[in-house]
Image (cartoon, rainbow, N blue to C red; front, side, top):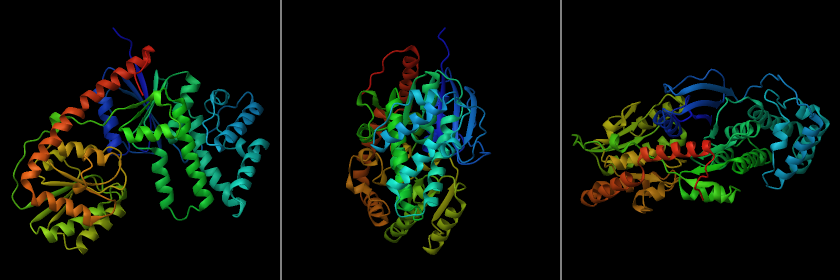
Length: 470
């Protein structure tokens, strides 16, 4: 009988407290590998998170870290002077855009030790802060820089010093704070680290930071540099670096990921489940969007596109299929937009629903997101025989065969609506294309094959066997 493998999944802002594509992927992976024990180390923006998934029986532990609150310091380093000297050296190397060696540094930092106080009270720590302020912030008041620096670094200190569950393998589902916590555990526990990136964490955070107007130039640059540095460190210390598609793998390599440790494993779906029987539904031309009602899905652009479609195809009916409770204020804005565009009679927010029921009769699906990696909803729709029009985000252009008829820039409701209008006006051509897309999903995106690959990866890493990558 083979020895049980225990994997600690390290997650930030997702499973099991937030629904979405990454969370669904994790939930399905854990459930598909019942012979493997999983621990969850989750990083959340606040205490008292509510479970949004029923955890599978093979989840043996779930530990949540509130990244915004300071932890109690329960231990001290034995060689503090050497530790601070190594921290200075680390900062100097990271300022040059490199990923320094951290083994000696982390080995001097016992679990339960956090640098909240020593980073500012120790002479070396204070010199690091003042030197960086002088170098990068010659205009603004020092107090502004200090509190921005403290906010950013205290969260890193929490991730570095918190004890993760014991495991045979640590598997981070992003870089950032999750990746930092995972590489800390790798070094301290002498265990292998797997990294799976659905998007590119540092790029996603940069997009968010650049949209926030109150983060000024030097603060913006500091946050962006931190996230880039965290990704570089994660790439250096990961034994295997997995992305969903080739473009992202190339971007990982550009930022320092060793090409020989990178691997592409695309998303997959349960093709049997989504091969639904098509049903003709009375009442016109049916258009849907499957996703949460949140800004990143840009539901407002979907609604605007629906107005253009409704004017061109008067018997159209629209469905926004997905939970609406994550951002109540945004949901209210969307409902007001529906009313103001006089779509109330033909537009429905379904809330949580079995999407297969809608795939069975939808004539077209829209994806209006401003950011995605490799959206499962496109694979689901294709498998069900539903054509898709989408924004050019993540791996979407490749999934849509770079067909400009069905691709649009972000926040371009006219181009999105034109794609849906083409689907409506060309039923014969779309039947052939739908069959081709369905065959592609069945051949390349079967979830069971994906799960078998991860099972083999875990087994090979535990056994010390080399992983074929690159």
